Image 1 (cartoon, rainbow, N blue to C red):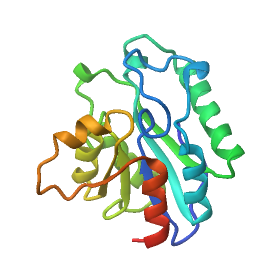
Image 2 (cartoon, helix red, strand yellow):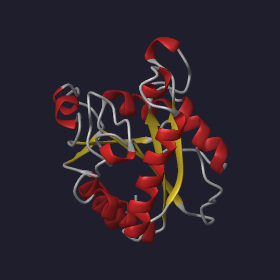
Image 3 (tube, helix red, strand yellow):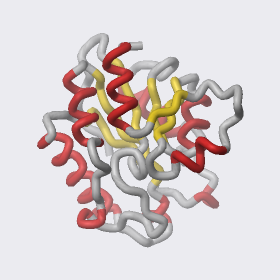
Image 4 (tube, rainbow, N blue to C red):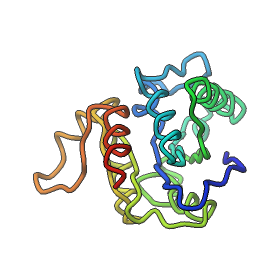
Length: 190
């Protein structure tokens, strides 16, 4: 899914993973809109990024579709709930991009491969080089590095476990949650 929204000229993109960054993570997969629960402060963080001139895009692996655990329609309903929550908080999502494939499908769009991020670059006619990509898992960071984006880790979701595995010389920025990462991006505009 992607929207027809085009960011204003000069608007910066920020790409967010969904599960574990915006909403709670579930080992059982989020299979319905009722199961989609935003993390505290995440919707307000997206709204703050929007107001600060960032075009906020979601890039998410959703292998539950490929596994037959969730229908494409149910996924669209989940994303509609997320969009409504962001809009109620005063923000806007510029697009939602997802990979429906299973890990064994060996597709190019499943993170850690860069396909989803390349789709975003093509859709918005820009490079993600140096642009923030925020995730909670190593695969999010690896996809970011593959397109020379600015890899940012949040400690929510799988983030604490991911942080423990980072190399000591890693250039990955780490924040407690999406709100803290958003505040830094807005404050520093770099």
